[in-house]
Picture 1: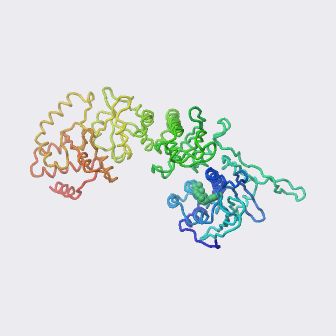
Picture 2: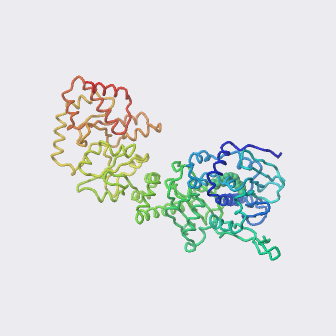
Length: 627
Ligand SMILES: Nc1ncnc2c1ncn2[C@@H]1O[C@H](COP(=O)(O)OP(=O)(O)OP(=O)(O)O)[C@@H](O)[C@H]1O
């Protein structure tokens, strides 16, 4: 390869600028990022060598080394991992901004502390070197390539970088940082040692540095030929629980996730029996930016007998637990396990069941012993956990107990068991209402009667809630019923006098109902009198077992509302016989049709829907206002 100067891709350039400026107050993280890259490179080599042992080149054990040259003011982070070819150096370190880059930049808040926390999540690791260096030189050779195929990459972090071929006998990578004036502290052996312990102690490879000894003649410290290891160099999860402090668990979590908030909870176990494995699982305190992507890499890394196998081992946990982070290290899986094999393996199935149970226990424990924390978890991840009710039949009951809902009578989200405990004498069902938003739910006319009677209704406004309700039809023997479906039958909660009054009103209004059915025949499946309204003149309900207006809107937004569903979603208009507007209908002739359409339009608006013909609504309303 000829020596070339290439421009950074535009996004990389922006990123570099941001990284060096936004993260200036948190300089020291660069070391963690470079060590983490070096460790990944060794993991990759170990993994590729499973298929091709020659890649190891018979060489020394894998290690990461730090070296300082005080004269030249350089700090070098070396590894004997997979290395990079010239093409890889160009693309990985210069031209390809990874997919998360744009998101990273839009997520920056300008608050340096917060921005610093974002850095690792988005994979800008390598560039953090420019916080402390005014030039970075990378020398590398990919495992398996000849010594003549080494590469030198160099840049001052402004607009461009240079690449050139070099001879390099050793496989692996040296990242040489030419330290800025104000970064001299990173030439200090003790400073580096303490950073390694702080951020990288859990790295399973030894991180080595030359030992310094006192030189009597020079009257100063001098580097000896001996290497010493700065970190504990054993994978954290392989140590026994009582040797690991809470701080170490937290530091490992931070290294794994780049999340600087401590986790809500963690669980570390060695599982023996039909399948042997170690699990170290964490519940994060807050949701990552791409939580909603069901295909996103889940946070569980798979190791087999301490060899790193893959990052996003989706088969290890069900999708509804995709917020869990951690490590699973199996004793039984073959080292060359592929993604396909993972799907089918009996061992993986056992691990998955075991990890699921463990996570559910962690959640139950939080819910029971730290309810405030659990609510914090629920706010971040509750909507994801809900997916489990439909997906994980075996754990449905445990999951149902972990659900929390907003309620008309409570200020905090509440558990179904507590709703049961608060049920009124004679109440036969748990009542729920779904709507676009919590505010829309709270002001829904469907709640009027329930409010008057003091009956609790749960308010559901997550997108998954309709789906959740189709799987969660009862809790501990009590049916879960939507207040917006079917006729209201409060059973024993409604007294006889009320029922009789509603019936009487119904027969009295028969002629009005007939006329309304005629006028609204294209819009409403039926029109009937209801006792569920107190203040509003009308509302829309779905027939039992049919599609609610809310669900129909969700399906429509997703482009999934089929014509037959649209027909099933055609609502029933219910009218309040006590309301003045309804009473007026009985004696109305000329404007009956306009009033009828308005009544329906209002009911659509009240449940958060959109009018198909807003102009007609406005015209009718104006006619009434001036008339
Ligand atoms: N020491 C190294 N050996 C081999 N390849 C490396 C090394 N350091 C960086 N790379 C390559 O450069 C790429 C970019 O590194 P960078 O630190 O910017 O992001 P990343 O490591 O992929 O993401 P993250 O920082 O989130 O882990 C890496 O994915 C890897 O392919």
